[in-house]
Image (cartoon, rainbow, N blue to C red):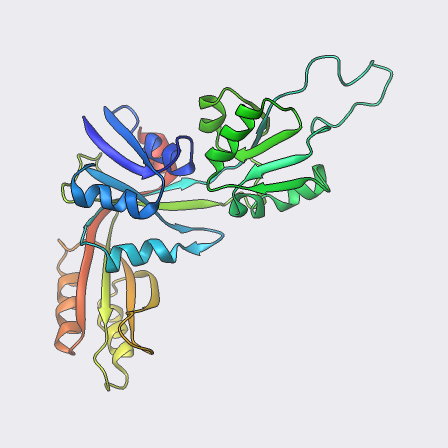
Length: 299
């Protein structure tokens, strides 16, 4: 049974997405408190592979996690999948009869909730719902959405609620007071799987390759020539961003996601041309990628 490391505790979006991606297969899912520990588990062999959230529709790249790939012990990217970051209001449903008689106006289903316990990012992604339904509610910040759900369960207080996943609500025996309360319905997170041994994955026709490019110093127009090497071959770049090399001020590398596999003819030729310009190129992985809709239909 392969061990899969993810950012815990149990019930986080990372946990939910990993269980969705590997559902139907026998794996042991191991939570870690810090993302550096998640990554380190695959480095040390404690886990076969590690699940790393790398980008979110609303918040963009998770820069600290990108830096792990670049500056940590080398681990190739083995797969990528996209999963919806759906947040829900979770707590204890009010007992029957508390809303009054049928002649009285119905009380808000959220009446009595005085505090929300969750992470700052999740609360920020649900501002519209909270403003319209829970104005003036108090917030308490914790390290993860799952920790917030656990705190509500332990308190056994109808005045407390959490924002988190359906999986966390099921794990801790709480009610879904409101489903999918995120402001943006296109809130997706891109996860990558890193490790030395590629897992057995279902077939797909879509592949990506991720590379790091460091430009030579004192070479005017080098970035333009790098992009041209892809452009004239019609190789599509789905993402390009610069990050500091941490070696000296003003020194950057370019993190590039490319649609295509290293098994193609054009991509290796483009990389060879870039290297001929004096650029340093490091391939972080050439891997299958799965959209949520595809995974949902195929699993």
